[in-house]
Amino acid sequence: MDRLTRIRTWIAVAVVVGSWSCGQDASPAARFMEVVDSAGVRVVRNTAASWGAGEAWLVEADPEWVLGELEGPAETRFFGITDVAWRSDAGITVSDAGSSEVRAFGPDGTHLWTQGGEGDGPGEYRSLSTLLPLPGDSVAVYDSRARRVSVVGPDGEFARSVIPEPREGHTMAAPRVAVASRLWVSAGGARFDGDSPPSGTTAPPVSFFFARPDGAVLDSILSLPTAARLIQQNERGVSIWTVPFSVGAPMAGGGGRLVTADPSAPVWTARDSAGRVVQRVSFPSEARRLEDGDWAADLEVAVEGEDDPERIRAVTEAYEAMDRPGEWPILDEVILDGDGNVWIEAFQARVDQGEPSRWWVFTGDGRLLGRVSLPAGLEVQAISRDRIVGVATDELGVERIQLHRIRRPGS
Image (tube, rainbow, N blue to C red; front, side, top):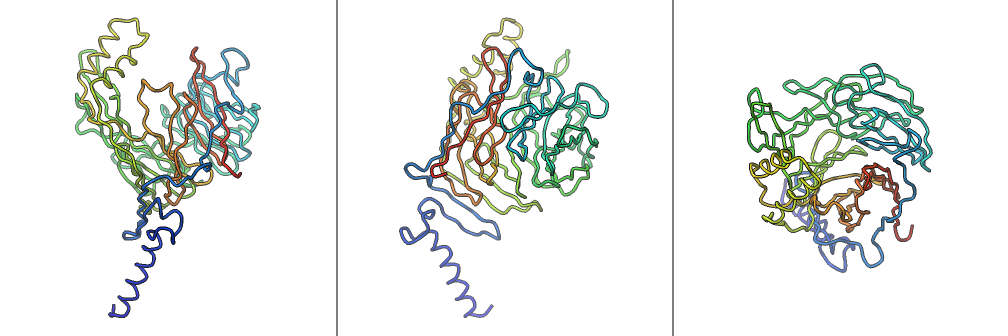
């Protein structure tokens, strides 16, 4: 490269970088974020939310409709909802592990069809897990016990099933998210050194790889840590406890992108359909030290309502044996909405589960819009452009699917 070319290149870079940092003369986003290009990766550093007065989105506290009851039609009784997916008409498809059924509902909550049942035959299930959308309102249903994917058509008809092939050295190929209609991300299962899990606190990594709906394995992508677990081996067998304040790395997919996040840091990363990192986004959030009182409060909730002294003793001893995290996680969940915006849930301790959850909302290019509060007790399953669907459990333990409208000023 000659001297003149280098000068021109330097000027071009200076203009691009300067356009993000020159205050009142730049884009309004420049006041809240800095963007650089690092070897083809878009690096975004948010310094503040960009929503101004009256611009924040509002999620209505009262649901537009509710499904779920203690008594009533079988199609509206739920016993362990594991996933909810949007249909193209703004209706939903639901996987219910307790009944081993997949059910579809229209945009107003009207029941459309039910498919499945407990068993090992075609179109039957043992342990329903993930739903992944396919073209034309078909869905892929993952049975984690059978390690089998079943395809259900738009009208509830069973089409076919396949057992995804694991990568060499892995025990499974469990579909997690759909990056595109013909491209999934699957998990290979946690891997331990040796023949059996070691005693003590551990957070084994899980490998993820691209796969197709027909079960074919494509390229490996990355390895992420799981939530920490305490493993206790004794004469009765092995006990496994999830360590409180420990979160596995969340991920979301859609629109040809895979988004992952680090629970311990205010950072999320986007990859393209080839697995290449194309964007890293950071945002302001303060680390919080995990105190003795936090740990004790979580234990109190864990044994609340428990009458069996042996169970209380076992839980208490497990808490004492765990390697305790030094800090609270920062985030817990990632979801992509229908517009490609990235929603990230702030971590919520077990003692605060009755409080509204708080979510950061980013545009697809990484700009932090602001924070949104969601109704207390709502476990979010999917987000479209203007609606959120989630699961809530009442005081009787009845699961309810709730649909809440998102209000955007000016829309």
